[in-house]
Every structure is written in C-alpha cells, then in structure tokens.
Image 1: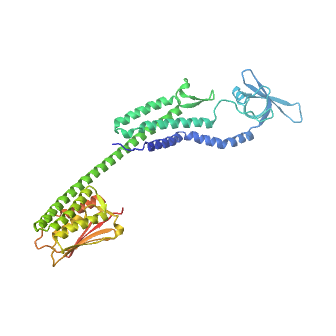
Image 2 (image 1 turned 120 degrees about the horizontal axis):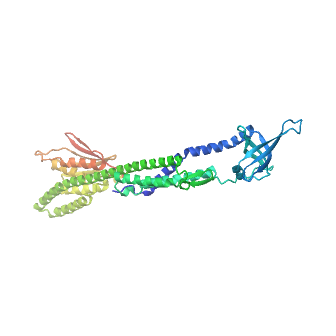
Image 3 (image 1 turned 45 degrees about the vertical axis):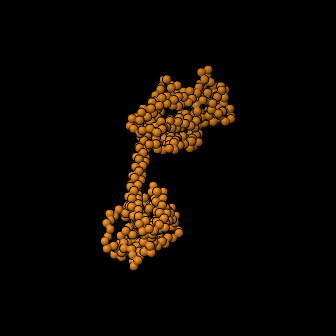
Amino acid sequence: MKILKRPHSTVVVNLLIAVVLTLTVNFSYLLSLMVEKRESSAHRQEQRIQKPEHEGILRLSDDGYGYVMCRRSLAPEFPDSVEQYKIFVSNRKARWYNLKDGDTLRCTAFPPHGKANRSIDEIITQNGNAPAPVVYDRPSREQDMAVQLIYYFLLTFLLMTVMTSRLDRQNITTRNYLQRCIVVIVLTFACYFFAPYINWHSGKIMLIFQNPTTPLDWMVVLKCTIVLMVAIFYGRIYGLILQRQQIMLEIEHLRSENLQSRYNMLVGQVNPHFFFNSLNSLSMLIREGKSDKSLDYIDQLSYTFRYILQNGQNTTTTLAEEMEFARAYGELFKVRYADKLFIDISIDKAYNSYTLPALSLQPLIGNAVKHNTITRKQPFTISIRTEGDMLVVSNRKAPKLEPEPSTGIGLKNLSSRWQLITGKDIEICENDEEFTVRMPLQKP
C-alpha cells in the first residue's frame, strides 16, 4: 500500500532538518565568530592602551624577516643619551602587510621573552599613513564559516534523502533499513575526504584529501559522525511513522469493508421481508378483482422497489428523498386498508437537506401495520414529524387479539444501521398507549 503521496513534503522536512543540524554541529564555530566580532574592536583598543607604542625604520633581510630599528631617549635633559633597540618582524607579517625595507612604522609590540627581542604586534601607521590592507591569502572567518555551513548542509540533506527516498514505494523492512544504513555510512566516509578545512601554513581553504600529511581531522570526524547518527535515527523514525500510517490505512480500509458488508446484509434482510408482504397484498387485490387498484398498487410498488434498488448501496439519503419514499410506501398500505390507515406527515422544510440512513422508515411503517389492529371502528394513524433535528415516528398501540410472530429483526436492523452509519443511537420509547422512535438527523 502506498502512502505519503506528496513527496515534496518529505523534501521540505529533510531541508529543514538539514538546516537545523548544520547549525547545531557548527554552533560553537558560530558562537565564537559572533563573540570575536563583538570583542575584536574593544580588544584592539585595549591592546593599544596597555602596550606602549614604538616608532622606527624597518630593515628587511633577504629572507623576508627584519627588524624595526627604534630609538628612545633615556633622559630628556641629555639629548645625546639615546638607547637603540629592535622589534622583530616575521617574514609572514612582512608579507601580510606588504612591508618594504625603509618603511617608517609606528606599532605596538609584544614584550620580550628572556634575551629575545620584542616582536611586532599591531601596525598603527605605515609611513605616516594607515597600514596597507592585509594581503595574505587566508580567508576571512565569514568565508570559512560559509564554506563549512554549505558543506554540512549538503552532507546532511544527502544522507536524509538516502534514508527517506522512495521509502513509501517499498516494503518497510529491517533489511531495507539496514541496506540504507550501509549506504549512508559509505557516503559519509567518502564525503569526509571532501570536507573543507583551513591550512594555516598556506592560509587557504583545502579539502581533507589534499593534505596527505594529516588526513585525519578529529573535529571533522566528530561533525560527520553526528550527522551520520542523526540520519540513521531519523531514517528509523521515518520508517516507523510510515509503518504506522500503513497500519492505520489498512485498519480503515478493513473497517470500511466491514461496514459495507454489514450494511449490505442488513439491507438484504429488509428487502425479502418487504418483497413478500408486497406480493401478499398484490395477490389479495387480484383475488378481489380490483384491477384499477391493482394497477395503482403495481405503480407504487414499482416506485418503491426502484428506490430500494437505487439507494440499497447508498449509506445515507436526504430527508426529502426518504419522505417521498415513505409517502409511496404508505400508499401501498392505504390500498389494502382503505379509509382505515392514515399517515400524518409534518416535516419542517428547513431539515429537507439533512441526511439519515436510507430505508429507515420502511421497517417502522411496516411494523406499525403488522402489529396493530386496523379497522373502520379503530382507524390507525402513523405520525412522522420533525422535532428540531430529530425525526420522530410514533403511533398509538392497538395490539391484535392474535399477535403475529415477530423476530425483532426490523428494529434491530434499524438500530444497527444507524449506529454503523452515523455513530449515534436511536431512541425507542414504548408504553401501554404509544410507541415512539426518535432518530437524530445529520446536518449536511
């Protein structure tokens, strides 16, 4: 059985999970990036305040590194008392800031360690101007973060898609689940070698497989493992949800089939009872030689049987249609009980479109006629009316001197059908004088 016939909904869910998981595995990186941005300006200002400034001329060697040659006065009152000192400049800093031999630099410096010289920290001015823009190839933290997010988003979405793709068109079995798990494990292992990282020596974003010296990055391994485990658990949960939906659909299908079969059985019990009574009435008219009434009776009988055939497979019908059937069905009895049987119908037109189980009035009218005395001295009236959203059928009780055998199938069928179709129960009220059945109508 196929379920989830809207594949786009699964894709949307996979995309949302991929976004959430990508942000989760990179949460610490995102947090550090935000904290770094927030504190960078304050930190630089603090460094300037805490560290003294130095000014001197840069001298670079052929190897790219060099020194800022600085001078300072030991005593202002003795102009010739000058101390010379050097601040070390690494070849990397010289390359980053495009420093040239002979540049006049104003900078801050890290304090010396032991007998070593001071080392340059931050360049404040270069030849009296703001320092040149950094020219090193290392990407910014924002670029690095964007590459990381894109990679883990694509990895997560790929694994989620493998675990859920076309699962609704296959049998959901443990073997199928394990096969998918093996596929995502292999994919994760393969994708690991295409994970991005920063090579701090070259300052470039590289892939794991491009660094043969250290192919194992534990942070990347941890992130890929988290993505893999979430995908495996998600695939299992997704499969269980599909299994549950399949079971619910199967239960609903079986329930519908059961209701239809039970309803067909109930209707089948109604039709033979009605058919035999009709034949008995028709044969009586023919024996009495009442040809005109026989023809009228046949016309009404034809209409009622046509209604039964058309509505026998329908579970519900409108109150207006059921009342038309009740009038035709009542005419069949009026032919037999001329001037002795009356059917009083009082229906509020506002409820004509309300629904009820088809063929509900037939057993009530038939039972009323069957079990009560109908004579000229004691004419019999069946009342059919609406009281709010309730359809009420009632008649006075006039039991026959010799009661006809009754199996109670008619009322039992009616009650069962009403419960099966509407989920509601009918009310049967009986005392020594009156028999009443109240049936709730359903709003369309």
